[in-house]
Length: 225
Image (cartoon, rainbow, N blue to C red; front, side, top):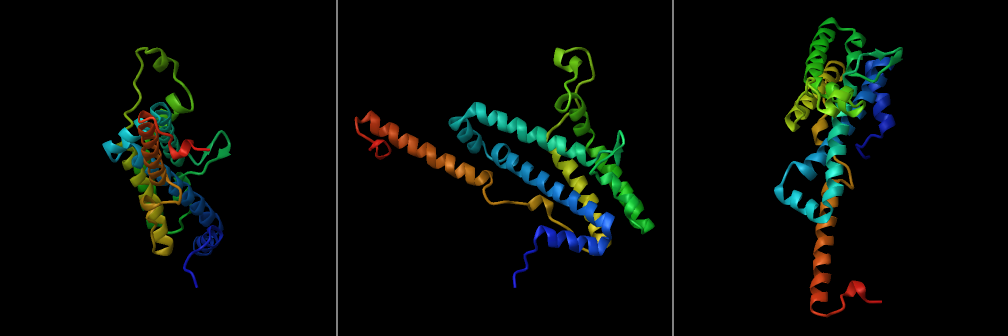
């Protein structure tokens, strides 16, 4: 029998161990954090690992991949900001780690959870600033270059630190309720950025072969009827 669990089986297991409200919330937060880590891994593979990869992307489609770089980075920053939202905004409840401490019945676990949530909010302050003044809204003063407070620095390190803080929040709850943790930073999926890079390399090599054949006055196999 396979040890693989479906998403629904995992959700029901969490509910059985944590109770309905906490189990459902934790399942949704865990899924969200897994997806954020996957997105961030795509960014790191494409833009934050090797200079040779950057050269490959620039050779293939520099303008397109610059846009992809901005989208992946800003989407990760935006997702981090959402994870530390208040429990409710304008009467609407939010999917946020700030809801967790109140749902833990053990006082020590709840207190430790509240401290970890506070640390996560602190680590994510740059993301909230970027959301309010650059991503979700465009601050006019910033856009016009006026003398306003600059955006808080948003670097790869600040993203990594915020993600680590969020992992600590969820894994604290997971340990307290089920004595287990999740390795969010190692999430991967079939059809990711590494496979894309392989296709790009093969395509550029093929393109070079065609160009070489043309320069010799030959018909390349890709051009044959």
